[in-house]
Length: 205
Image (tube, rainbow, N blue to C red; front, side):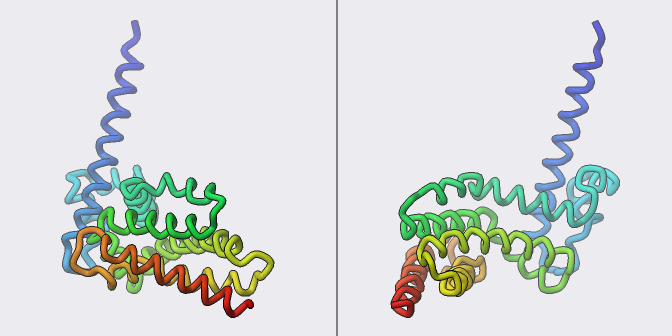
């Protein structure tokens, strides 16, 4: 009997373990480093105790690593359940669920997310990754805004921009700076979002 299937399975397990170590090291480096220049492929590889070539093999580039870190954070924050929000036929309830979903996501690894978003102001590669993720959030909010403001595309676009600001990490972080989660921030953001919807509808009327 050929040992090849076992050997291939063992090798894949080693590859998967190296990937987990690299992602864990990247998140730790983001969370613990006080320096905005400390997040490099070399630094991540050293913390993960792997060769730099391993990081490039697994992720292709620094941007690929950052994308994978964001995907890892999204999984930890339960973002795979976000699609259920858009299946709710009640647009106001769906918006509240959207707010709560992003509160869970932002709280998944708050130090790492805070550093990532701060790095986006200094590092073009980080900025591109964060901008793409923020655009996804905007697209979701545009869908909800159109449900809240049917037949009024300009008003829906304006509402989506306001909701995008309200559901940002920076808003949650500012409203609840001392908590690991965002228990205090969520009801405030929910109320502000409801107020934005009411104001948009009043202007339309």
